[in-house]
Image (tube, rainbow, N blue to C red; front, side, top):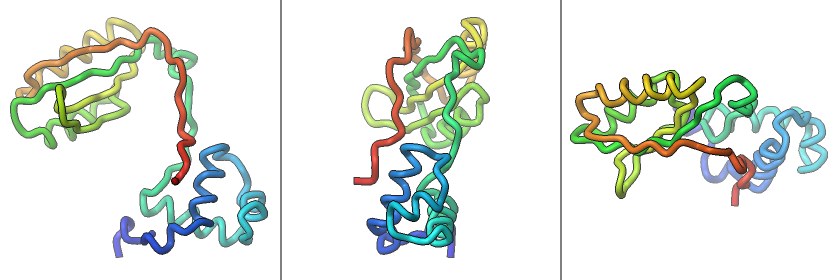
Length: 156
């Protein structure tokens, strides 16, 4: 059984969803505390969280403020591709400045978010993007201010 198969729809029940939502609010909450909240033992919460993580349903990570870590230039870049969209998306996602890659339908074939130290690094990154044979063009939307960022959209 693959990691993706480790959590079936039947296993993503209301208790697993409640665990996910609790961790979206605060990823450092103890499994014992979550267990009391959702009506499971600490061990049961730990097992479910491990299965959800192994299956790729969730990750538990530290979300940082890029500017406070010295990354003063962020941008969303729309990429138009002349062939092999998936291969190009895979290659672009491996660039160290790229932290988000999505294949889209519409004006752009791919959207990537980049986090750079400064304008010089952003310019180098753009030159690198444009050097890919499959990249036809790029449109850069520089972030002036990160207004809000949420990771707690729940499980609906």
